[in-house]
Amino acid sequence: DGGITQSPKYLFRKEGQNVTLSCEQNLNHDAMYWYRQDPGQGLRLIYYSQIVNDFQKGDIAEGYSVSREKKESFPLTVTSAQKNPTAFYLCATSRTGGNSPLHFGNGTRLTVT
Amino acid sequence: GQQVMQIPQYQHVQEGEDFTTYCNSSTTLSNIQWYKQRPGGHPVFLIQLVKSGEVKKQKRLTFQFGEAKKNSSLHITATQTTDVGTYFCAETYGQNFVFGPGTRLSVLP
Image 1: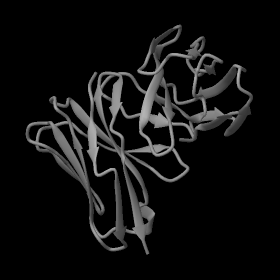
Image 2 (image 1 turned 180 degrees about the vertical axis):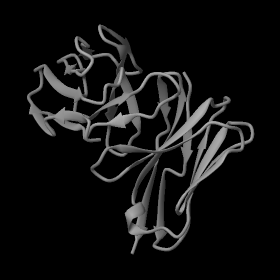
Image 3 (image 1 turned 180 degrees about the horizontal axis):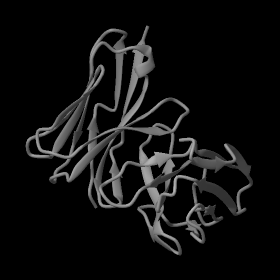
């Protein structure tokens, strides 16, 4: 979606390094999400935030951290504690209430060697 | 936690053939959303089903929600190469989304 920017598209890191993935949105959506997708797999929720300065762990939060200091931004840090960080990371947003759909960014493909 | 299953995992069809993917849950689903992800792309929202027995159509795509709200299906009539991708269903409840594992569709020209 044009209103969600994830950068960079491809990211390479050495094992043991922390890396931060950017997600910025101009859709004025309150809720933001981070999903991880492995090859041929579905989407697994890492963290989500429904409001500024608040966020909740998803199903696979271990080894990841987030912050939500601004409504527009929800960066994800992949720490060295994450055992298998190589994956496709998708940021998404939605309006709150009424089961509004998710709008996804283009994703960041992280490779850790 | 809640789980949503999808079958089949993969489907290869000849262009012009029909395709159906099924989404199932052991519990009653509040709402169902369907997404399509093209190869190398990101998921894109297709439709939401809310009511028991609901049927919605988008051109060659037909979406159904089961009477008991425990299953849903997506049917594509006369597939085209542009239909290639992975189709996900997702249960939604409030601000939470539980995705199925997806069905990957290949269309042979």
